[in-house]
Length: 106
Image (cartoon, rainbow, N blue to C red; front, side, top):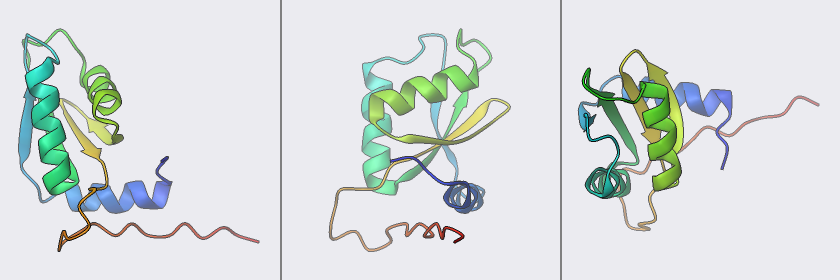
């Protein structure tokens, strides 16, 4: 699913108040980091990550690679931080993120 600019904007606003929970270091993106990201995305839908100075990846590269491996969308990349979004598969989740509908002009 490709995010629209309005949905991306909505998610950026929601991401301002969340803490960074992923850290990409010199090992890059390994199986443990992908599992951690998957678990966090399933629980929260929206996560923030940071690429540490000793990493060989840029924040854009890390975000794109993690997004591909977790089947999520890159919401934004600013400096060393990035935000990923993936809707949860849990039907009973109480505080699901409801994305704004994209209204096309006629």
